[in-house]
Structures are given as structure tokens and as C-alpha cells.
Image (cartoon, rainbow, N blue to C red; front, side, top):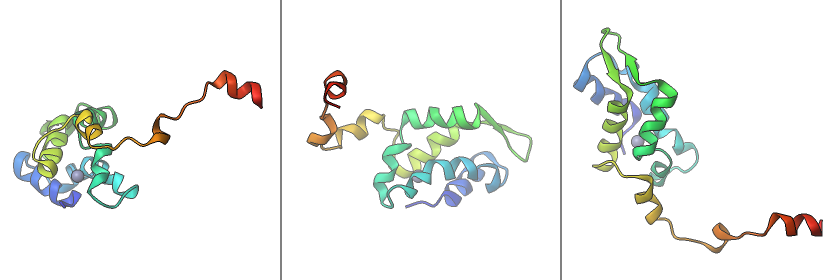
Length: 116
Ligand SMILES: [Zn+2]
């Protein structure tokens, strides 16, 4: 499993600059390891929507220490491709989630309020 620092080194090789130019973005993709320590953590951000979410957090582009401007989306795509070999949609991840009864449990809120 690639460490965010190694993804940052790969970014440097592609677009120049230093690892610190990219590390915040690669750290963000892998922060979900705080929730689950194995590779399933990737379901949270390693997909097309996650890449676009990174843009809302870091902006459309970043300015490298070399004064070069690089799209954040390129960095996200690089990270996800290096980890998974392609860029899945979130729907690809959902297909791999086994449905459990508790996920669909629902009670009409009106009924619940009436009994309380
Ligand atoms: Zn990752």
C-alpha cells in the first residue's frame, strides 16, 4: 500500500516541485485510514466523486514551489490510479457492499413521534 509520501514523490516526478507541494492532497485521500486501517478505507475517497471533492477542498489548482500551476484533479487521478489501477465511480464501490437489514431499516417518523 503506497504511503502518501510516495504518492507525493511520484507527483514530483510527473510535474516537478517538492513532495511538500503535494503531500496535503495525498494525505487527504488516505486520511480515511483513521476510520478503517485496511484497504477498504479507500471506499470513502478513492473514486471519481472523491477526486472532485478534493477540488472543493484544495481548489481547482495548486501553485508549486517552482511557480508551476497544476490542476488538483490531476493529482487526485494520479493517486487513485496508483492505488487501484483505474478510477472507479462510487457506484463501483457500492456494488461491493453487501446489503444488511439494518441499512434499510426505516420507521415512519410520524409514527415514531406518535408513540413517544
Ligand atoms: Zn490512497
